Length: 102
Image 1 (cartoon, rainbow, N blue to C red):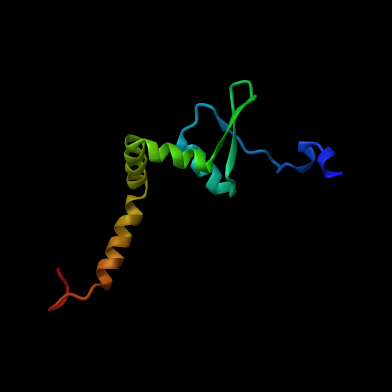
Image 2 (cartoon, rainbow, N blue to C red):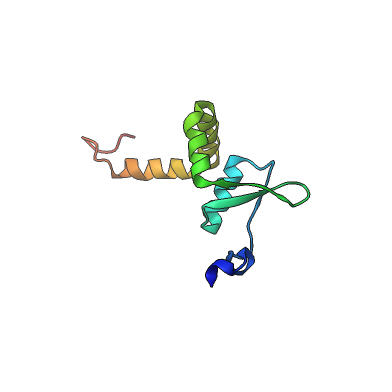
C-alpha cells in the first residue's frame, strides 16, 4: 500500500536546498531554475530547519513595502541592459508624426 512507503521512495531527486542565510532572491532563483515551488532550508550542519514556499515569499513581499522596493531595485539594476534594449525596440515601433524623434 502506498501509505506505507517511505518519503525517500517518492521524493524528487536530487534534493535541492537553500542555506538558512540565503536571500529571498536566491530562493526564488533556485525555485525558478529548478521549476519547484518548495525549497528545504538547511543550516550549517546540513539539517533541514524549515521549508520555504513560493506562497511564503509572495506573502512576505505583500507585507513589506521596503522588501518589495529593494527587490525591484536589484532586479532593475541586474536587468537594465534588457530594459534598455526593450525600450529602444518599443520606441522604434512607435509612429511619430513627421518621422523619427531624433
